[in-house]
Image (cartoon, rainbow, N blue to C red; front, top):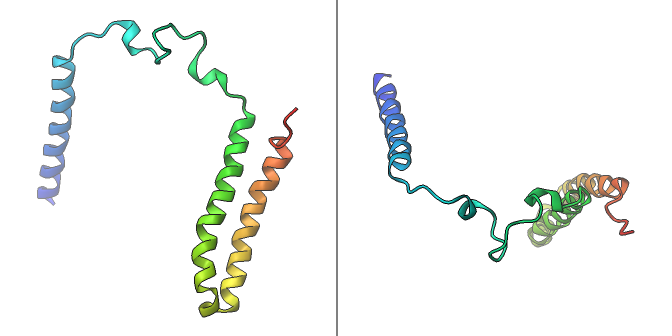
Length: 113
């Protein structure tokens, strides 16, 4: 038990020491150098403010279809060996994905006007 505490304390001291050394040795940067890159110009708006909330729902839709394809290909290879239980499990998985697609549709992410 004491070895675990000793090792944890040594690791914590090492991490704190690295952060302290970094803070002591870093060069002060100009404010322009830490801004987002805009081809040499100052940004006109905040980086997060450009995206409409609808894009988060579109991302959810993409992930739903992406995960469907990731799991459908291996499932298609082993479905003959596993039988009816594999079919039931895949339809359960597709039902969960359908809930995500229904949510995206209800939120209006598929309307582009």
